[in-house]
Image 1 (tube, one colour):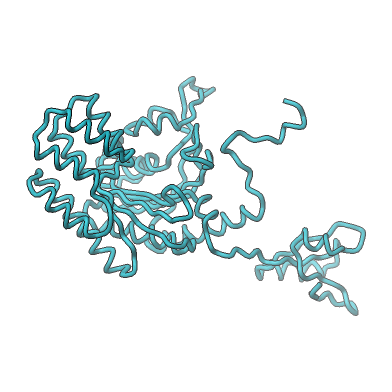
Image 2 (cartoon, helix red, strand yellow):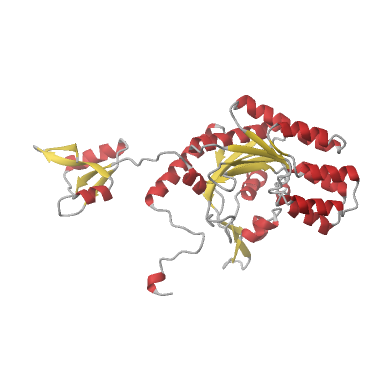
Length: 396
């Protein structure tokens, strides 16, 4: 690489310059304060871990997303975290070891071997909240509401929240008793919403006619709240657990609507995002300005099992970089006060007082008089001058 090319960064990796860094840090502090107001405690997880503990119980996608390195001390393979949820689950199960509910939150970088979408970062800043130790729908209601508050705090416009339940598809698939290859083909077709392909797979399979029709209908059950009523009719003869899962969705909708009457909720009953990971309700938020979910979450009750405690768990997260990019919020950086490089005791005392009051005070080391460009680069609109032996702050 020539010296002229040494400024290039890998694809999907970016530098964050001061204006954007200020925006990200302002949002990070605001959202973590929001989560704290709901009782969620901040955790900071290791950037690297031994691979067998970092990936245990996770999906194959997470394995592909994880950079692997060799530990120079032990010779063991280590991974750079690509997701924080498994680490938070370990903290709940192994480190805290509490009997009652545990609320945790986080905001930190992860690293991906490949971008998860067009023009997405391979170094996202994941920010989220997770609830451990409560199996009732109250937990899911709380998290959907916090996710909505997160997007309101960021000032995203025209947000729609989509809910689903992976348990319905899992139950029907178990009843169908398909061979492994057919099951994988059906799963992939359902993920892509490839209805013709789904029809072909199901029609060529030797399964009960009623079950076939239920699977066919499931892939088309998406829309507003009327979908839930239609789903109850479609799955009237399904196993009892399907009715229970639909009742969970209805209870969550009722609970969220009571807290947020103006919220717009949609449904997609064949949403299989995180199928290997989630065990129940899944939810995601979308905005017309972005082609992917801006925040997503769900229930993953068995995630702590590999760490010795299978506690109920639910949570959500988002990429802080995406939120900052889509935000309609105005981020104004406070203008600074510029001060000459002078060791006068009264001046130093004034500068210290101003900084304690929250002002930004920048020392000017140049010999020449401040130009308009200098003031703009230092983001200052005032300066400190000496008049009649007294240091005062004046507008520029």
